[in-house]
Length: 350
Ligand code: UDP
Image 1 (cartoon, rainbow, N blue to C red):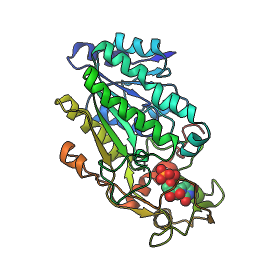
Image 2: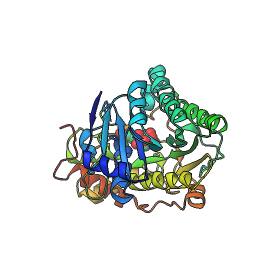
Image 3: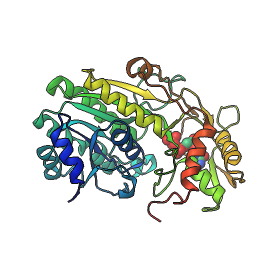
């Protein structure tokens, strides 16, 4: 286990009344944007717990953020954080997120996404920390029964990834009843885009997501990208998704934390724009943003992809005062392009 910290900020925090916010998976894509917002805009002291299997040390760009490089299933490391700091709340991102892989190796997903966070929840119970923000997913709903989908939509996942997240949602409900640990389960639709200044962004390996794949193909980093299915019952035959900007997601976590700090009870909120874009529309928008042609191949449908997923995010607005601000797909792609084609060429690991 490695521990890095900036003593000045740790000292200042010790002098103040506010404890720290523990962010698991804070060096990952959505985690790193949230850490930056908590640290730079909210002035919170943040401790990141990340094993750096998928996270990037370089994604922690804010001064004073502490990184504990360890696995969240490591009880000694997690206990060490709670012993050392007064943890006011936990924002939990650390998870595996490849649907296809979860079908081939479900135990890997149940161990990491469902079982490992129990170590963090046990430490919270022991130390009297009662606020937990959970990075959940619209994959907990499974096949859509109606569009847009609200939080009361049936939850019946169609793959182990969605199931592993739904199980933790259920565990969290029980944790409020038994231990008073309150939580907000944030069900993301399609996370997308990068920080508008191009400083941090999306760097998955392997990359399976549509927007980075389209932009990589445009840059000539890869061969043609494959459109998975053109015979869906949608206006242009390709799948429709609700792309929600990572900065909007980060803000929702900050708001959810504020809600729990004000005494809010356990709840779940969809995070989306309420607007869908098809794969074809994403490709067209990417060509307009980059000025480059996107080489495309047309392939079979990808297993488990429903034709359309669009959020009804009105509960998040009513409860948290949160609404997506970046709703134009071109703007979202511009931020992804700023990261990918910027000076750092969008690669932490290159
Ligand atoms: N998609 C595609 N080609 C790709 C990656 C994705 O056609 O290389 C499609 C995929 O079938 C889905 C949509 O783009 O309809 C969004 O997929 P992504 O993997 O980004 O997110 P998901 O909806 O699976 O969470």
